[in-house]
Image (cartoon, rainbow, N blue to C red; front, side, top):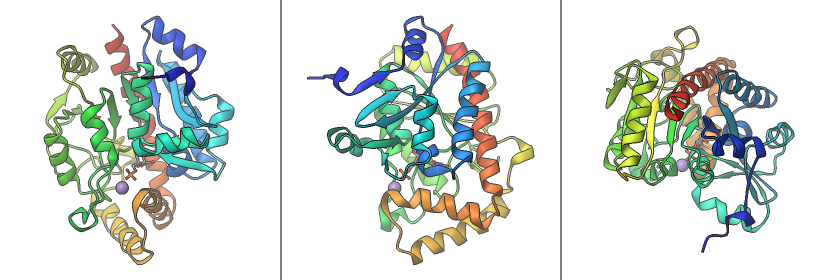
Length: 305
Ligand code: PSU
Ligand code: MN
């Protein structure tokens, strides 16, 4: 039996927006605690919330404080998760431990989808999702984000999968899992730092209204599971695929040498790529999250109509 009240707090303004049928967007906290360095992580998280509000959407940044799932973190809680080093990275399998042991946690894409669904939020904006890692045929490193997209009915807006992942294999998994992949105003899957990956999308979206209609038709006929909406980084902030590719290779070699595995892998690679690019990858990362917030707000507004 469910006993949600024991574990879940929905911030008042988020609850009110949901009850009134106003647009609400979920935001993750792993990107804050483990995906970007302090203080840019906190500045970015708060800026994204502002962008959503300016575009008529209620933001709900999701994380775990003292074993309680917070749907709608306060500014102070965002600042705490962005600075403390006692924050677990929480995907599906970590919830019971972090809640049961009353720990603090930052939710991944998978973790944020779970909490969003508990709260009744259907749209979630982030930077990049996890996927099938390069070399997964021997490491078996496939992000739990993909399993979550298979089972949890939340739409995730991201800038595609960065090439620390095997984009082709990630798309194959999503196809097997029945997850529609829609690309905003392009027919190509973007590769996070770059606008191009060479991989074709399932479907090109020209308007936010199309996205809203597609989401509704999936869920209204009872097809459970998520939808991935990709949105390319703005051209001015893109790092060309050929340029970032070799830096990513270098970071992967270092990860191998240092024996990095499991949940440490993605944060390690993000941090190394930032060092190797003299911080440029971080600027690109922030730019694409902003852009996803703008497009996500349009889709959430259309979805709420
Ligand atoms: N990709 C990014 N930045 C991130 C992540 C992915 O560009 O911060 C985070 C997200 O929270 C994602 C998680 O859900 O990493 C995936 O981790 P893993 O590969 O361990 O499943
Ligand atoms: Mn992994």
